[in-house]
Length: 442
Image (cartoon, rainbow, N blue to C red):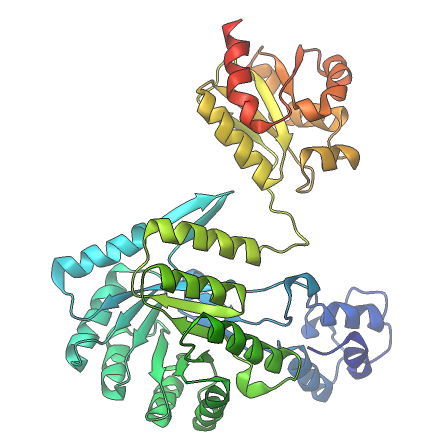
């Protein structure tokens, strides 16, 4: 990724403001931070536009698998560490369906993969892709399985085979779904790259180390395959950590284009596979294919992924609104808290544990927690009163309003503003069930 000064040198330098920025330098700074598009400048020459497009392209190519809204994007990364800017496309997880399954067992396997999902702080965790593996060695059977899976699975697919004939039959059977073709190696790279070019599909390359992956990537590009995903053949945790780091550093720091592609791992199942997936997730992996993944393995792994790929500069937020919990009525208490997702879901869970119906009002504090928002002046009686008026919660119930214990000092002022009894609540969310039960028993 070019610097702001490098972008600035290619701009017209007229400061015309037609791009929406006061100067060309300001526009260049936005380009460097990926917050503006080259097309926003209407006066740029075609030559400069081409040069800028190349400079603005991520050092690691963005590769899309699948079509439409369910397509999975991989790569596109520009930094080694999240705090430098942010990570862009989170690691995708795929589960395997072998082509020796058919009929009801095949459907049951796909249904089980579809059912592997969780919700955490407002985000849904789920399997991103299915990898159809050609274990039968039969091209016709492989194509039939691919067609059957594609008819009941609406997310992206991976076609996994080293046989170019089988791969082409499978590609023909599923139409233009843009799967990832996985299985190009030193022995079949030209044939697989030709299929990738012909069908417009990304190509997964199997190598033994970063050096051989780079060589195969060059050969694939020479044939015409543009979108590549590299499997560095990491045999253990140590090599996964080392080789992924070498590849990312070469791409981002050295601008070495043959390694400027998303990285992938094929793991098996069980504890070691999950450990490999965790290392790959933490260190630059864009895709992990599992033979199988149990729910108790998937939840912590997907939670790890969520934490790594959450933008550290943008707190996870929920919408300011009134959230009824447990079918509250005209005498139910009113509670309120900030729109920081972790705060909201923690408070909500503890209210639900109490089995006491509550009107929960969420206040927009730009994703800040209770004390931080209060200290920043974003969680004050005036703002809370406005939110109550907007949602109309005080007209829905005559119950008391409960103030978070950490900001108890606002209770008097809030009571004056809303003309309703205000009770000081708990300091910690885990104390909510006991407090609500005591309140309703009085």
